[in-house]
Image (cartoon, one colour):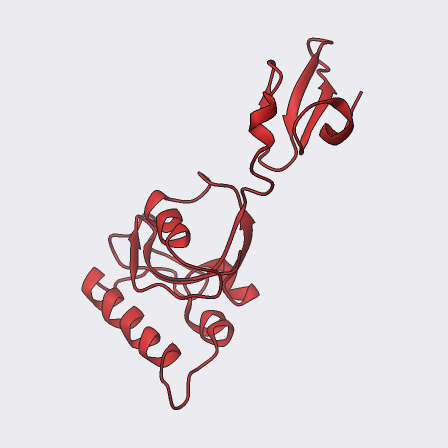
Length: 162
């Protein structure tokens, strides 16, 4: 049993689904992945698309949450060295005479597996990323680049895409 929020009286992106274990209906938000037993209120549909989009370049250091990457099995650089590297990358991206491509640098130098996609993280709902990263995305206009952003994962440069 599934219905689209636009035709059911529920806000957009909400479906009514049938629980296989309890054999009763529940409510599922196709945009955020939220499931609940209680129906959504009409005001929950006020924001059409709460997803954010970003690309990033991550430079990990020896105090990162997981100090290894697809590029380097055991990352030994210090946090200061990570900042130095990210600032050097930022200068390359913002060089007025010959700026380098974000995607190209991410593909070669990011410690995140998203490097395979030029640093593209796609879209994600609020609350899905570490708070400093999400705050950086929210503080940027689409198409704008952040300065260094520190999270438990390392030091990032963030480019907002949505």
